[in-house]
Image (cartoon, rainbow over the protein chains, first blue to last red):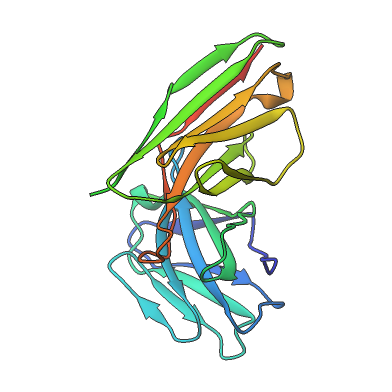
Length: 110
Length: 114
């Protein structure tokens, strides 16, 4: 699985968009980008995934650069409940293993 | 709908004692099953995964072992706990038919070894 690089921590004002970057410069053509988040003392929760095109669901948007070497998870209107650690993972869709890095600790400020 | 259970929720054990953590999944068949550990303030470390009954892949050599005696049951064990085994243990499952791309995590077991 390709290695990902994320900032250690970020702050965001409540109601503003939170933009969480992820660098995956060694990603291969058949690897997807997945995002999960982990709220304190809970198991991680799936947010979104994508291959090439930008994706949007009820939780977030995923913007993948044209060269696929980086991506950004966007929480359009961050709330206090979005305070969590966000993990960016790249993997082949049908691979068994998920390798989580250390993620970005997002703190949403009132 | 599918649900995943882990128990116990919290556990305090002395160094050198045995360990058995259990995970069960309901509402799906032949899931891929996973054990992760998260040390305090750290990321998730994949310990074991299983693609079927009796099939276990180990990711990190250590004093832990895993077993899958039934299709939807995954057990994490140790004969003698170390202080470094303290952490938050998470079980997860993924549909083996790829109907979902994501993993689903259980509530976790917080283990403290004293």
